[in-house]
Image (tube, rainbow, N blue to C red):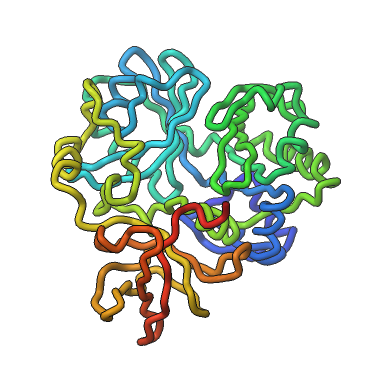
Length: 361
């Protein structure tokens, strides 16, 4: 299995380790609920160095980005971040990603760990215009410092004014004495915080400095288990569960990152345009169980007559709400908030209510 700059630390701290996207990653340390609440109320650190980073540079960079991503990168200023996706030829989602505009002709794509190889091959295949592209995944470490105390923790380690970095914006600065760290006001938890990109050889220095600075706030390392429950409480999609090559952005409620503007001729656009005019046959929605139970990926969703209307894509017990929550695709007429549906759990239908996202307000 592959390792990150922090793998030995995770093992030394007694983390429960497991293979994820080819990497030996920490799933939990003190327990998912404890870690989840640490991030909601204080501050936690995630090692997400398994994520992929591609650089796109040169005079053809924007043309390439506009071809492979669904959002409109021509509107993205230097220093800002855009959530977007790679559509395939059939309008499905090859991956969802973050796009950083680092300079006038320089962008960084941050892709999901499990899709690095697939995404890289796709980018090479689509690069007919000759943009300069580089896979920097193996040379980039990434820590996510998340929670309401993240800013106070990080501000101790940098002269950069963190209040000057709005949500979905970034800058480069010195952190814990390390130069040229990308400091990004982004995250996958809904609890606020920053993501830090840097060279792996600087990893231990930054990790130790973060834990020293955050000690007064009860900082803890957080595993991928709590990362999943945190993102689900916010209704954030997880690729491989809620998104895949067969789901389109419109079905997934991601029309807002799919810009059908002039000149934005991304792969699969005509399929998505047709779907927009014809309407979708299924919609992703959130739901809250009204009875005791845990919804799981793959469980059937039914109407009150026990007729199948969809399938659960993600589910858990919400540590904050202390009840079952989930995401799933249903027929459009059942996707409205307040609709009562059933989740088939072990041959029994548990009542649930379609819920406006996020679950954690």
